[in-house]
Image (tube, rainbow, N blue to C red; front, top):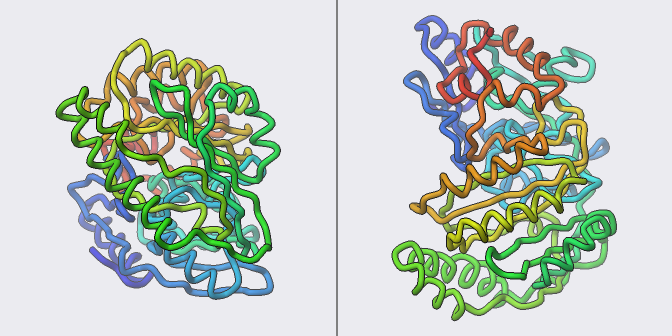
Length: 415
Protein backbone atom coordinates (compact mmCIF):
# COMPACT_ATOMS: atom_id res chain seq x y z
CA UNK A 1 0.00 0.00 0.00
CA UNK A 2 1.29 3.47 -0.91
CA UNK A 3 -0.78 6.08 0.98
CA UNK A 4 -0.55 9.78 0.13
CA UNK A 5 -2.35 11.28 3.12
CA UNK A 6 -2.86 10.77 6.83
CA UNK A 7 -6.50 9.94 6.19
CA UNK A 8 -5.44 7.10 3.88
CA UNK A 9 -3.02 5.83 6.54
CA UNK A 10 -5.76 5.88 9.12
CA UNK A 11 -8.25 4.04 6.89
CA UNK A 12 -5.63 1.44 6.01
CA UNK A 13 -5.04 0.62 9.69
CA UNK A 14 -8.79 0.54 10.36
CA UNK A 15 -9.19 -1.94 7.51
CA UNK A 16 -6.35 -4.10 8.83
CA UNK A 17 -7.94 -4.05 12.30
CA UNK A 18 -11.29 -5.18 10.86
CA UNK A 19 -9.53 -8.01 8.98
CA UNK A 20 -7.27 -8.83 11.96
CA UNK A 21 -4.16 -8.38 9.88
CA UNK A 22 -0.86 -6.79 10.80
CA UNK A 23 0.57 -3.57 9.39
CA UNK A 24 4.28 -2.89 8.88
CA UNK A 25 5.85 0.21 7.38
CA UNK A 26 8.88 0.29 5.11
CA UNK A 27 10.96 3.42 4.65
CA UNK A 28 14.07 3.51 2.47
CA UNK A 29 15.00 -0.11 3.19
CA UNK A 30 18.35 0.81 4.73
CA UNK A 31 17.95 -1.15 7.97
CA UNK A 32 19.56 -4.57 8.25
CA UNK A 33 16.87 -6.23 10.39
CA UNK A 34 13.74 -8.13 9.24
CA UNK A 35 11.55 -5.71 11.21
CA UNK A 36 9.14 -5.00 8.32
CA UNK A 37 8.60 -8.62 7.24
CA UNK A 38 4.88 -9.37 7.48
CA UNK A 39 2.10 -11.47 5.97
CA UNK A 40 -0.26 -8.53 6.50
CA UNK A 41 -0.21 -5.07 4.94
CA UNK A 42 3.18 -3.65 3.97
CA UNK A 43 2.98 0.15 3.85
CA UNK A 44 5.42 2.00 1.58
CA UNK A 45 5.74 5.70 2.50
CA UNK A 46 7.56 6.63 -0.71
CA UNK A 47 4.63 8.82 -1.85
CA UNK A 48 4.15 10.34 1.61
CA UNK A 49 7.13 12.69 1.55
CA UNK A 50 6.06 16.34 1.56
CA UNK A 51 7.06 19.30 3.72
CA UNK A 52 3.83 20.42 5.37
CA UNK A 53 4.84 23.52 7.31
CA UNK A 54 7.92 25.61 8.04
CA UNK A 55 8.10 28.18 10.85
CA UNK A 56 11.07 30.35 9.90
CA UNK A 57 11.03 32.34 13.13
CA UNK A 58 10.97 29.28 15.36
CA UNK A 59 13.20 27.25 13.00
CA UNK A 60 10.82 24.29 12.98
CA UNK A 61 9.59 22.07 10.17
CA UNK A 62 6.69 19.60 9.96
CA UNK A 63 7.05 16.84 7.38
CA UNK A 64 5.34 13.66 6.28
CA UNK A 65 7.07 10.60 7.68
CA UNK A 66 8.27 9.20 4.36
CA UNK A 67 10.46 12.13 3.35
CA UNK A 68 14.08 10.99 2.85
CA UNK A 69 16.79 12.88 4.68
CA UNK A 70 18.45 14.06 1.47
CA UNK A 71 15.22 15.68 0.31
CA UNK A 72 14.56 17.22 3.72
CA UNK A 73 18.10 18.65 3.75
CA UNK A 74 17.48 20.26 0.35
CA UNK A 75 14.13 21.70 1.42
CA UNK A 76 15.62 23.16 4.59
CA UNK A 77 18.60 24.66 2.77
CA UNK A 78 16.32 26.66 0.46
CA UNK A 79 14.78 28.18 3.59
CA UNK A 80 18.04 28.96 5.38
CA UNK A 81 17.66 26.10 7.85
CA UNK A 82 19.39 22.79 8.59
CA UNK A 83 19.16 19.75 10.81
CA UNK A 84 21.47 20.12 13.79
CA UNK A 85 23.23 16.81 13.14
CA UNK A 86 22.85 13.81 10.82
CA UNK A 87 24.69 10.58 10.12
CA UNK A 88 27.04 9.77 7.28
CA UNK A 89 24.32 8.76 4.82
CA UNK A 90 21.07 10.52 3.95
CA UNK A 91 19.03 7.85 2.15
CA UNK A 92 16.75 6.96 5.09
CA UNK A 93 13.24 8.29 5.59
CA UNK A 94 12.82 10.60 8.55
CA UNK A 95 10.52 8.02 10.16
CA UNK A 96 13.04 5.22 9.75
CA UNK A 97 15.96 7.33 10.94
CA UNK A 98 14.24 8.60 14.08
CA UNK A 99 12.43 5.36 14.96
CA UNK A 100 15.77 3.52 15.13
CA UNK A 101 17.65 6.30 17.02
CA UNK A 102 19.92 6.92 14.04
CA UNK A 103 22.69 9.36 14.94
CA UNK A 104 25.66 11.28 13.64
CA UNK A 105 28.70 12.23 15.68
CA UNK A 106 29.49 15.08 18.08
CA UNK A 107 29.52 14.93 21.86
CA UNK A 108 27.45 18.12 22.17
CA UNK A 109 24.73 16.89 19.82
CA UNK A 110 22.07 14.20 20.20
CA UNK A 111 20.62 11.80 17.67
CA UNK A 112 18.05 12.95 15.13
CA UNK A 113 15.08 11.79 17.24
CA UNK A 114 16.15 14.06 20.10
CA UNK A 115 15.12 17.05 17.92
CA UNK A 116 11.51 15.89 17.52
CA UNK A 117 9.13 18.36 19.20
CA UNK A 118 5.85 16.98 17.84
CA UNK A 119 4.43 14.00 15.97
CA UNK A 120 1.26 12.30 14.74
CA UNK A 121 0.91 8.59 15.47
CA UNK A 122 -1.68 6.30 13.89
CA UNK A 123 -2.53 3.74 16.58
CA UNK A 124 -3.80 0.17 16.38
CA UNK A 125 -7.46 1.05 15.79
CA UNK A 126 -6.69 3.66 13.13
CA UNK A 127 -7.11 6.71 15.38
CA UNK A 128 -4.52 9.49 15.22
CA UNK A 129 -2.78 10.82 18.31
CA UNK A 130 -1.31 14.32 18.01
CA UNK A 131 1.57 14.45 20.47
CA UNK A 132 3.17 17.76 21.48
CA UNK A 133 4.64 19.11 24.73
CA UNK A 134 1.11 20.37 25.56
CA UNK A 135 -1.01 17.47 24.29
CA UNK A 136 -0.13 13.84 25.06
CA UNK A 137 3.41 14.73 26.17
CA UNK A 138 3.86 11.17 27.45
CA UNK A 139 3.35 9.85 23.90
CA UNK A 140 5.82 12.38 22.50
CA UNK A 141 8.35 11.46 25.15
CA UNK A 142 8.34 7.75 24.32
CA UNK A 143 7.37 7.60 20.62
CA UNK A 144 10.33 9.61 19.35
CA UNK A 145 12.12 6.25 19.11
CA UNK A 146 9.30 3.78 18.55
CA UNK A 147 10.98 1.00 16.52
CA UNK A 148 7.73 0.67 14.55
CA UNK A 149 6.05 -0.96 17.56
CA UNK A 150 3.77 1.83 18.77
CA UNK A 151 1.94 2.63 15.54
CA UNK A 152 2.51 4.28 12.18
CA UNK A 153 4.47 7.51 12.47
CA UNK A 154 2.55 9.90 10.24
CA UNK A 155 4.09 13.36 10.62
CA UNK A 156 7.11 14.69 12.49
CA UNK A 157 7.90 18.21 13.68
CA UNK A 158 11.60 18.88 14.09
CA UNK A 159 13.54 21.62 15.79
CA UNK A 160 16.07 22.88 13.25
CA UNK A 161 18.90 25.43 13.36
CA UNK A 162 19.99 28.24 11.03
CA UNK A 163 21.90 26.86 8.06
CA UNK A 164 25.63 26.47 8.65
CA UNK A 165 28.75 25.24 6.91
CA UNK A 166 31.28 22.69 8.11
CA UNK A 167 35.04 22.99 7.84
CA UNK A 168 36.15 19.41 7.19
CA UNK A 169 39.61 17.97 7.72
CA UNK A 170 40.05 14.33 6.69
CA UNK A 171 43.30 12.39 6.83
CA UNK A 172 44.92 9.08 7.80
CA UNK A 173 46.54 8.81 11.24
CA UNK A 174 47.92 6.23 13.65
CA UNK A 175 45.05 4.54 15.45
CA UNK A 176 47.09 4.27 18.66
CA UNK A 177 47.68 8.03 18.64
CA UNK A 178 43.96 8.62 18.09
CA UNK A 179 43.03 6.44 21.06
CA UNK A 180 45.51 8.26 23.30
CA UNK A 181 43.75 11.54 22.39
CA UNK A 182 40.19 10.12 22.40
CA UNK A 183 38.77 12.42 25.09
CA UNK A 184 40.61 15.42 23.68
CA UNK A 185 39.31 14.73 20.17
CA UNK A 186 35.65 14.32 21.07
CA UNK A 187 35.59 17.33 23.40
CA UNK A 188 37.77 19.60 21.27
CA UNK A 189 35.98 19.08 17.94
CA UNK A 190 32.37 19.79 17.08
CA UNK A 191 32.27 16.45 15.25
CA UNK A 192 34.93 13.75 15.28
CA UNK A 193 34.97 10.16 14.04
CA UNK A 194 37.49 7.64 12.83
CA UNK A 195 37.50 4.56 10.63
CA UNK A 196 40.04 1.93 11.64
CA UNK A 197 41.37 -0.34 8.87
CA UNK A 198 41.38 -3.85 10.42
CA UNK A 199 44.73 -5.58 10.76
CA UNK A 200 46.57 -2.29 10.28
CA UNK A 201 47.75 0.49 12.58
CA UNK A 202 45.93 3.15 10.58
CA UNK A 203 42.60 4.93 10.64
CA UNK A 204 40.92 7.64 8.58
CA UNK A 205 39.92 10.58 10.78
CA UNK A 206 37.19 13.13 10.11
CA UNK A 207 37.08 16.39 12.04
CA UNK A 208 34.25 18.81 11.29
CA UNK A 209 34.07 22.34 12.70
CA UNK A 210 30.84 24.36 12.46
CA UNK A 211 31.43 27.70 10.76
CA UNK A 212 29.78 30.60 8.97
CA UNK A 213 32.82 31.00 6.71
CA UNK A 214 31.97 30.93 3.00
CA UNK A 215 31.95 27.56 1.28
CA UNK A 216 35.21 26.31 -0.17
CA UNK A 217 34.16 22.92 -1.54
CA UNK A 218 36.43 20.32 -3.09
CA UNK A 219 36.89 20.60 -6.84
CA UNK A 220 34.20 18.57 -8.56
CA UNK A 221 36.76 16.19 -10.10
CA UNK A 222 38.17 15.41 -6.68
CA UNK A 223 34.76 14.85 -5.07
CA UNK A 224 33.87 12.43 -7.88
CA UNK A 225 37.21 10.66 -7.59
CA UNK A 226 37.18 10.37 -3.79
CA UNK A 227 33.48 9.69 -3.15
CA UNK A 228 32.58 7.57 -6.16
CA UNK A 229 35.62 6.17 -7.99
CA UNK A 230 37.78 5.27 -4.96
CA UNK A 231 35.44 4.99 -1.96
CA UNK A 232 32.73 3.10 -3.82
CA UNK A 233 33.64 1.66 -7.23
CA UNK A 234 37.27 0.67 -6.55
CA UNK A 235 36.42 -0.49 -3.04
CA UNK A 236 33.55 -2.64 -4.34
CA UNK A 237 35.84 -4.29 -6.89
CA UNK A 238 38.41 -5.00 -4.17
CA UNK A 239 35.77 -6.57 -1.92
CA UNK A 240 34.42 -8.73 -4.76
CA UNK A 241 37.91 -10.04 -5.50
CA UNK A 242 38.65 -10.67 -1.81
CA UNK A 243 35.39 -12.56 -1.30
CA UNK A 244 36.49 -15.13 -3.90
CA UNK A 245 40.25 -15.02 -3.35
CA UNK A 246 41.42 -13.46 -0.05
CA UNK A 247 45.10 -13.43 -0.98
CA UNK A 248 44.46 -11.74 -4.33
CA UNK A 249 42.12 -9.32 -2.55
CA UNK A 250 44.93 -8.25 -0.22
CA UNK A 251 47.15 -7.53 -3.22
CA UNK A 252 44.43 -5.54 -4.98
CA UNK A 253 43.75 -3.53 -1.81
CA UNK A 254 47.38 -2.40 -1.73
CA UNK A 255 47.10 -1.15 -5.31
CA UNK A 256 44.05 1.07 -4.66
CA UNK A 257 45.30 4.60 -3.88
CA UNK A 258 44.11 6.46 -0.81
CA UNK A 259 42.15 9.69 -1.09
CA UNK A 260 44.86 11.65 0.76
CA UNK A 261 44.41 14.63 3.05
CA UNK A 262 41.29 16.68 2.39
CA UNK A 263 40.56 20.17 3.76
CA UNK A 264 37.40 21.98 2.61
CA UNK A 265 34.28 23.91 3.66
CA UNK A 266 30.78 23.10 2.45
CA UNK A 267 27.11 23.08 3.42
CA UNK A 268 26.62 20.98 6.54
CA UNK A 269 24.61 18.11 5.06
CA UNK A 270 27.03 17.80 2.13
CA UNK A 271 29.88 17.23 4.60
CA UNK A 272 28.00 15.02 7.05
CA UNK A 273 26.63 12.59 4.44
CA UNK A 274 28.49 10.74 1.69
CA UNK A 275 27.32 8.47 -1.14
CA UNK A 276 27.34 4.77 -0.26
CA UNK A 277 26.80 2.27 -3.06
CA UNK A 278 28.75 -0.75 -1.77
CA UNK A 279 26.47 -3.38 -0.18
CA UNK A 280 27.38 -4.75 3.24
CA UNK A 281 26.17 -6.18 6.55
CA UNK A 282 26.56 -4.07 9.68
CA UNK A 283 26.40 -4.34 13.45
CA UNK A 284 26.72 -1.25 15.64
CA UNK A 285 26.83 -1.02 19.42
CA UNK A 286 26.45 1.89 21.81
CA UNK A 287 28.62 1.82 24.95
CA UNK A 288 29.35 4.42 27.64
CA UNK A 289 31.80 6.99 26.35
CA UNK A 290 34.34 6.14 29.07
CA UNK A 291 34.49 2.49 27.97
CA UNK A 292 35.26 3.17 24.33
CA UNK A 293 39.04 2.75 24.29
CA UNK A 294 38.97 -0.52 26.24
CA UNK A 295 36.09 -1.96 24.20
CA UNK A 296 37.68 -0.91 20.91
CA UNK A 297 41.04 -2.46 21.79
CA UNK A 298 39.25 -5.71 22.59
CA UNK A 299 37.67 -5.61 19.11
CA UNK A 300 41.15 -5.14 17.64
CA UNK A 301 42.38 -8.18 19.54
CA UNK A 302 39.34 -10.19 18.42
CA UNK A 303 40.09 -9.40 14.77
CA UNK A 304 43.72 -10.42 15.24
CA UNK A 305 42.79 -13.63 17.06
CA UNK A 306 40.14 -14.71 14.56
CA UNK A 307 42.59 -14.14 11.70
CA UNK A 308 39.84 -13.25 9.23
CA UNK A 309 40.46 -10.76 6.45
CA UNK A 310 38.15 -7.78 6.92
CA UNK A 311 38.37 -4.97 4.39
CA UNK A 312 35.56 -2.82 5.76
CA UNK A 313 36.71 -0.23 8.32
CA UNK A 314 35.45 -0.19 11.91
CA UNK A 315 33.68 3.11 12.53
CA UNK A 316 33.84 4.95 15.88
CA UNK A 317 31.74 7.97 16.90
CA UNK A 318 30.36 9.68 20.02
CA UNK A 319 27.13 11.59 20.76
CA UNK A 320 25.40 13.35 23.64
CA UNK A 321 23.16 11.66 26.16
CA UNK A 322 19.39 11.99 25.73
CA UNK A 323 16.21 11.15 27.65
CA UNK A 324 14.31 9.01 25.11
CA UNK A 325 13.37 5.65 26.70
CA UNK A 326 14.50 3.38 23.83
CA UNK A 327 17.32 5.55 22.54
CA UNK A 328 20.72 3.86 22.49
CA UNK A 329 22.12 7.06 24.06
CA UNK A 330 19.58 7.20 26.89
CA UNK A 331 21.07 8.57 30.09
CA UNK A 332 24.74 8.48 29.11
CA UNK A 333 27.26 10.12 26.82
CA UNK A 334 27.65 7.40 24.24
CA UNK A 335 30.33 6.04 21.94
CA UNK A 336 29.43 3.83 18.98
CA UNK A 337 31.48 1.03 17.46
CA UNK A 338 30.23 -0.19 14.07
CA UNK A 339 31.59 -3.28 12.33
CA UNK A 340 30.86 -4.29 8.73
CA UNK A 341 31.56 -7.03 6.23
CA UNK A 342 30.97 -7.11 2.48
CA UNK A 343 27.73 -8.62 1.13
CA UNK A 344 27.85 -12.39 0.76
CA UNK A 345 30.62 -12.70 3.35
CA UNK A 346 30.13 -14.85 6.49
CA UNK A 347 29.63 -12.58 9.49
CA UNK A 348 28.36 -14.71 12.39
CA UNK A 349 31.71 -15.42 14.06
CA UNK A 350 32.90 -11.81 13.79
CA UNK A 351 29.62 -10.17 14.82
CA UNK A 352 28.93 -12.57 17.68
CA UNK A 353 32.45 -12.01 18.96
CA UNK A 354 31.97 -8.25 18.89
CA UNK A 355 28.57 -8.55 20.57
CA UNK A 356 30.10 -10.63 23.36
CA UNK A 357 32.53 -7.79 24.05
CA UNK A 358 29.81 -5.13 23.99
CA UNK A 359 27.68 -7.12 26.44
CA UNK A 360 30.34 -6.54 29.08
CA UNK A 361 29.69 -2.79 28.92
CA UNK A 362 25.89 -2.89 28.84
CA UNK A 363 26.09 -2.31 25.07
CA UNK A 364 22.89 -1.37 23.27
CA UNK A 365 22.59 -2.48 19.63
CA UNK A 366 21.50 0.03 17.01
CA UNK A 367 17.82 -0.70 16.36
CA UNK A 368 18.29 -0.69 12.59
CA UNK A 369 21.32 -2.98 12.46
CA UNK A 370 22.13 -6.62 13.01
CA UNK A 371 22.40 -8.18 16.45
CA UNK A 372 21.51 -11.36 18.34
CA UNK A 373 19.73 -9.91 21.40
CA UNK A 374 16.27 -10.69 22.77
CA UNK A 375 13.78 -8.82 24.93
CA UNK A 376 15.15 -10.62 28.00
CA UNK A 377 18.70 -9.44 27.36
CA UNK A 378 17.75 -5.92 26.24
CA UNK A 379 15.28 -4.93 28.97
CA UNK A 380 17.90 -4.49 31.74
CA UNK A 381 19.87 -2.10 29.52
CA UNK A 382 17.03 0.44 29.28
CA UNK A 383 15.94 1.96 32.62
CA UNK A 384 12.59 3.10 31.15
CA UNK A 385 11.85 -0.13 29.28
CA UNK A 386 8.57 -0.66 31.14
CA UNK A 387 7.31 2.82 30.24
CA UNK A 388 7.79 1.99 26.57
CA UNK A 389 5.94 -1.30 27.00
CA UNK A 390 3.11 0.43 28.84
CA UNK A 391 2.60 2.86 25.96
CA UNK A 392 2.82 -0.01 23.48
CA UNK A 393 -0.01 -1.74 25.31
CA UNK A 394 -2.09 1.44 25.06
CA UNK A 395 -1.46 2.20 21.39
CA UNK A 396 -1.34 -1.38 20.07
CA UNK A 397 -3.13 -3.70 22.50
CA UNK A 398 -3.90 -6.33 19.83
CA UNK A 399 -0.48 -6.49 18.17
CA UNK A 400 -1.50 -4.70 14.96
CA UNK A 401 2.11 -3.60 14.40
CA UNK A 402 3.84 -6.74 15.61
CA UNK A 403 6.26 -8.92 13.66
CA UNK A 404 8.40 -11.95 14.49
CA UNK A 405 11.42 -9.66 14.86
CA UNK A 406 9.64 -7.31 17.28
CA UNK A 407 8.38 -10.28 19.27
CA UNK A 408 12.00 -11.34 19.68
CA UNK A 409 13.50 -8.00 20.66
CA UNK A 410 10.54 -6.42 22.52
CA UNK A 411 8.34 -9.37 23.41
CA UNK A 412 4.73 -9.81 22.24
CA UNK A 413 2.57 -6.68 22.29
CA UNK A 414 0.74 -6.37 25.61
CA UNK A 415 3.12 -8.74 27.41
